[in-house]
Image 1: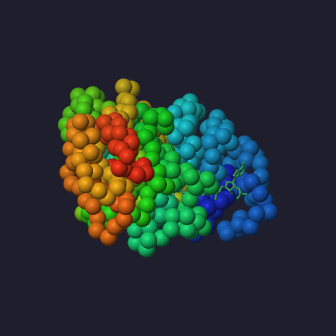
Image 2: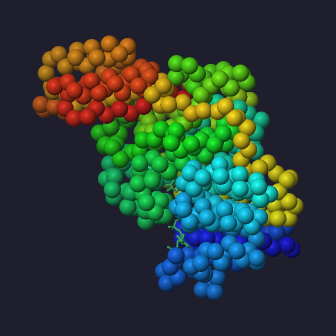
Image 3: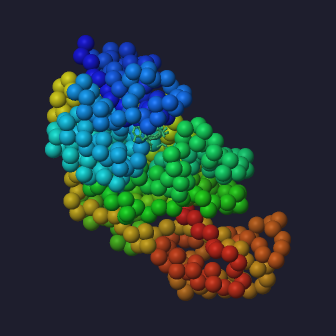
Length: 448
Ligand code: NAP
Ligand code: HSE
């Protein structure tokens, strides 16, 4: 049987998981593929480090170039993270005509266009299933399964660490920092966990999905990003009383003039639409399926103009889920070696030259707003007057019981309004003497 020799650059959570998964299911994969996968070499930073997954010392090196350049290595697996050395690893492997598998969404977000062009020039492929939503095969879904559809909506819970934190804060009232430390211990979090909690990791992933869905490589600078650091137990509880669950949501939507989500799905409408590509904490109605996606699980909800609504669910982070996605790419890369690259749909095909991301200010949303106000008559009137001048409608006002004191919380639910108008109105409200502290604003998604 033909054998494909793998060079792993990185032997941490994901690299160790891939090594272990090949030991466990290598024979199964070989019987399905007709190609045996064999790990030839693994590059790490520190040879002396204790490793949960034991790799024979003879296979370990600290020199990634010796892995990539080794003529005996057929496929390079970049699972080291970062965007500088990792970029060199991928470019060098592609230059040598070797297929590359990466789990590195930060790298693709920053350099995707360059790397896919390099793969095309070299006549090989760059695979990245593990870069988005852990074990969910969402890249293959968009690349192959839904190829006949225009994607009009895509909503994703795509960061396992944040979903784990939000779930435990809601369920147990757990403390943010303690749950983050637990996510790090479980191997869910990035080496730099601010990438997770400040929304950047989700933004990298949602940019990749938007690029695949809309056919132009989304510039990460155009993705609107908000994280979960500022969310409080109070907001999680108030949202619950109103029938919502707070999730960090990636949103990719066709938007028409006026900032509203596009309803039409014709070719002309699609060509004229601009795309909202954003990540922010969001109130999800409890009746919606995404509200029930808990712990480290991810889910991606995709609407195609032909298929309608579809949903993909699975573990979004961690050693085994990610290794499963890498194995799927390794199978494609091994078949490339066996039959050549031309028999499959390329990993990324640019096809929408005029595509553009709309600025968040121009998007229309609904909102939950929490204000801390002085408990005295006339306060609501002052706030309502500012919103009325901005032509922003209030759908409900709640002053929850049990918060007696000089300063009390007030929750406003706001009808559809442009983000720019809302931002300006909140800045004016924050300047009122009766309003204490910065207003909290969280968008509400209706999934229409
Ligand atoms: P990790 O546990 O920190 O592993 C990184 C590995 O790369 C380590 O083995 C490290 O060596 C090695 N490394 C770093 N710099 C190196 C260098 N210059 N030369 C050689 N080896 C080097 O990280 P991870 O969680 O596996 O993540 C790896 C990638 O997968 C990242 O891009 C991440 O975003 C992505 N990803 C992670 C998950 C997850 O759940 N963890 C899921 C999907 C995607 P040492 O072991 O000696 O330190
Ligand atoms: N840190 C990432 C997460 C790993 O928590 O989702 C999976 O990409």
